[in-house]
Each structure stands twice: as C-alpha cells, then as structure tokens.
Image (cartoon, rainbow, N blue to C red):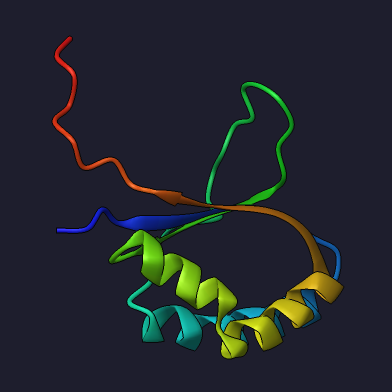
Length: 103
C-alpha cells in the first residue's frame, strides 16, 4: 500500500471574494484526485518561525495523487485564481507509513 500524500498550505488571503472563487474551483479538483481537507483554517497558534492566518492540510490516497492533483490542468486554472487572491506556501509531502518509534 502506498503512503498517503499531503498538501500542507499556509495562506495569507488579501482578496476574500477571489479566494472564495478559488475554493469553489479547487474543491472538485481535490475530490477528483481522492483528496479531502483534514485541516481547513480553524484555531492555530504560531509557536515557532513565521505563520500565516489560514492553514490547510489536504490528504490524498498517495503521494503521486497529491502531485498529480497539483499539476493537473484543472488545478493549474484554479491556482491562477488563488495566486491573484492570496500569498501561499505549499509543500507536498509523503506520509509516514512505517512503524511508530517506541517512546
């Protein structure tokens, strides 16, 4: 079984209306690639380094699915909307599937 893939996103929205358009365009793309948000805004506390007010984690069935979603033509179109509406830091990471280390 392949390890899950995750988008980890930190976002600073500067145009709320345009960002809402992005969300409406992006959500079907995530779903089409098996993605589902597991963190979407909510309370947060920046305890080290820099932070942004919107934090999102999207889980995909595999690392490859996460990459495929980001690089899909549908998401490229949605991404153009987001880039006009917000500044973001996004990393795509592979989940950890090995046994947990003992304490």
